[in-house]
Length: 101
Image (cartoon, rainbow, N blue to C red):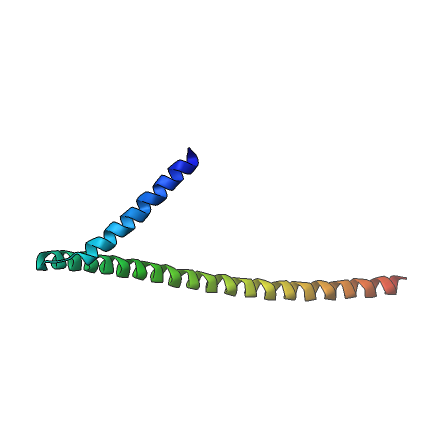
């Protein structure tokens, strides 16, 4: 029954696709053309708005990524400095130990 339902849904989807194409192909009057053009312009505006939102989101994500990269580099530099400082302390400790021995 699941396969039958899936096949029925596929048939409905294919039928709807054919109907949309037939509608566009059967535009015969100026009124229908105006309605179709109005619909297409609405879709264009919607697409442009979506594009602008996505572009803005992308720019924010890029800025955030840049900030995170800066923080990562600062942390790496700080870690390197701490590591050098600890190595120096180990060297001093070893020298003091050698002097005691």
